[in-house]
Amino acid sequence: MSIRRRKFTLPAVAALVAAVACSAAIGAPASKRSFVPDDYVEPLDPPAVLFGEVMYEYYNNRNLPAITHLLIARQQGLLSERDDYSEMLLGDLYTNFGLVDRAQAIFSRLVTRDILAKTRNETWFHTAELQYNQGKYDEAARILENKIENLSPAIEKERLVLLGNIYILRGEYQRAADLLSSVKADDVVGAYALYNAGVAFVRSGEIERGIPLLKRVRDLPPGDEETNALKDRAALAVGFTWLQKNNHDLARESLLTIRMDGPFTNQAMLGLGYANFQRGDYKKALPLWLELLQRNTSDTTVQEALMLAPRAYEELGDLPRALFGYRYAADTLRGELKKVERTIVRIRESDWIDSLSPETAKDSAILTDPLAPVTGYTPANIPEAPYLYALFASNSFSEDYKVYLELKRIEKLLDFWQAQLPIYQSTLAQHRVQLATLKPRLDDTISRRKRDVEALRAQVAPLKARIENAIRKGDLEQTATLQQLAQLDVARAIEARLGNSTGAQAERLRRVKGLVIWDIAASATAQQQQAVKDIEIVRNDIEMAALHVESLETLRTDILRRMGPEYDQRIAAAGERLRAMKDEITQRLKAQTVALQNQALVVLAENRRNLGAQLAETHLSIARLQDTSVSEAIEKRKRQ
Image (cartoon, rainbow, N blue to C red; front, side, top):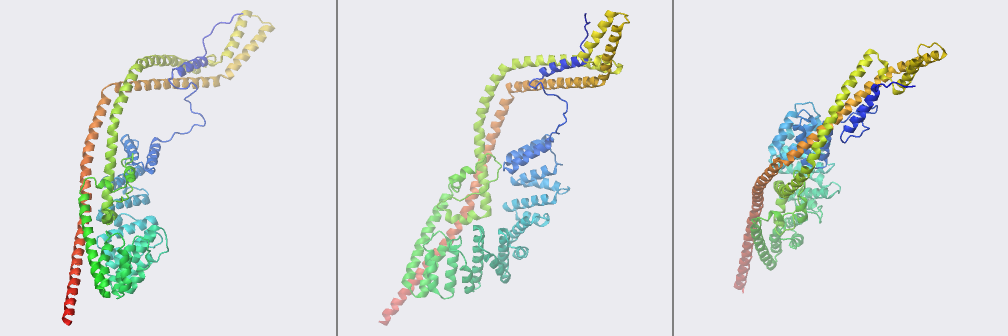
């Protein structure tokens, strides 16, 4: 019995083409299909993913990668000026970098939009802080007064303290006092607000309103070091205020509350001694000033004690010790003048700025992120430090020195990047040698794969047409399975052998053939749907293979570009840019160094004037005592 040969059915051809298409997909696993499974998860939105990466860099204090990714995303159109949160972040980054004008432009756009008022106002507050730190007090006050409201309680306290400081710096003491007097001193920020309010009242002449506020700070319970130092400062302010008003008992009462191991010990001892002196209790004043003489003579309080201790001896009638004290003071002050002169010479040297911070701090300031904030500095233990502590503590010097550290960090980074250029050139040369070897193989692979893809496309097009034609004409056999077709072929072959027979075998054959045809018809709809789905899978797999071929062509284009002169030109251009930036940074460092030196020289010039005046006063006191002694000796001889 022979069975006639038939063409492959459509499902069989589709399966064969699918297998070939999968093998043509370069690097794609053969089991991968393009149909969407039931558990398919929608991919993340690219802008959301990118913004999340920017936020991750931002909160890890890597500001350069954060702003770089943000600006690239905006240039590529993934993020735009209409994205409020990315705009807010960009404005905050510009604020951190000191690019106030750019930040201001962003904030001006945002204030017209319907965004979270809390976020906008907090960003305005940080902008005002930046303006304050840069010494732009009027601009900071304008923002704090007009643009910020509904802040959180903690930030609202900081706003009041910052605005109060501006009023005090501008001499508007009454305005500062009225602003700060209602703040609760339940934390460090509130305590500062209360202290500033008290100082403002005192400076405006309203002592009866300022002293109680300062006492409230002075009488706060002990806390951390910052709180305790503020308590001592408030007690010192109360004490010296009463000294100026000649109320020595109240002055002593406040000064005695200052810790003897705190930062205001010298001032407290000087003030206590002066209070006792003014009360006529010279014996109680003298030990305090003598104790100060044992301390660092570069301290201004110690220098004042040098003048006051001999005066106390005078009042006690001990003129020899008073004369000795004045001579000791003259020698000491003369020595301090020499130190100041040496310090002035040292500050004028070009490497003085680099000696300000300890060695450990110098290296820690040079970070891999050139835009990371400089958190501050700790003055090194240098000989001239005692004369410059007040300068180091000033806001203007601190900000200028941070700028200097930032410039030094950028200089180090430029040196590092310049050192990388030869490495890039060497790596490029090695890549070119490797790519020259790989390119012929890649060309051959691309050509073969492109032919495979085109051949598969040529097979799929008529196959799809056959499926559509079979469905339209109702040709059930075109979508039958191989087993069903084999059974039908066997039945037809037997039927041909029997001819027109009408016996029992013919009837049995007719029933078997009808059963096979019924089975084909019953499964026809499902088979047709599966055939359509299979051909679509095949088409998608072919397109995936085509995409892989396109990727290979893109890779080949990159190889050709790398083998050309473009990268050499880019490396050379980068070297030129780095050299130009290095020259600019060098000039700015020189200018910043001169500015810092000038600030220090101004302070030292004032110290020199004060020391000269004290030394002159000491010599006058010596001359006065000597004249008194000579006059007394003459009178004594006359009496004899």
